[in-house]
Image (cartoon, rainbow, N blue to C red; front, side, top):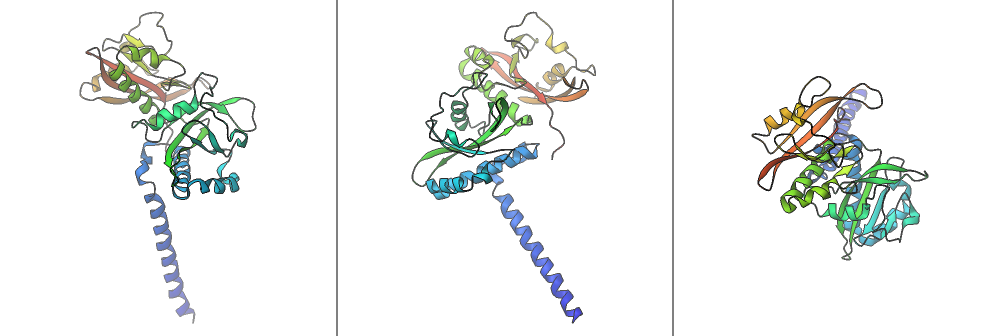
Length: 310
């Protein structure tokens, strides 16, 4: 009898394994179009999946899906993230973390740095260079009295009733993804192509999408002359950017420009002191080549290099 039971157990285990594999593969295939490979952090990838899955509910069930979200509010509001839904005029129609906002028009709401999150989201949703419509701003953490840095992603949805909405969710104290500065720099480059010199003042605006947290888009000429300073809006003194060295004596800007002779964009890693612990940390420099009034220039930004994938 025992001899007969064992083969059946093995078969059952194999069937369970096959079913589990099919389930995992089907789940992953649902996200193929999202290209989550661009993110180094698990929190970021999980947030994109979370918002995307929620958008699919609205896309399938329409406004009836709001009843589901309201009945399961705890599922969509955790200490790490929460879901919200707006119409394209800025009216909040669902907020898992702050229900009191529902029904209010937040189009002109401004954060402490002068950023208007809802208007930034609408612009990001139309930006082909920003496929997950990322925006960065300050917001309240539910139950706290002070604003915190936040990064949020969004998806636009047309419901079966024909209502156009956007679904979003954000991370408080987010990790800096390389993708975030890639979007900012590529968008700034495009703006310079479209507007020329007038784009520079827009890029330097602290309330713009080109400046968030410790990230600041800058621009300079092949000789190292700053058009937009990475430190201040106005340069107090001329200095040779290409001669700037990191903590190991390497010249990241000079090396990056050498690579840009045959490329349109480049990533360069260098070492800097951590402002809190005074130890050395890795930084990512992203530079993109473009032209301003016929002259070759370089647009870039710097962020902390992502930790090992997790």
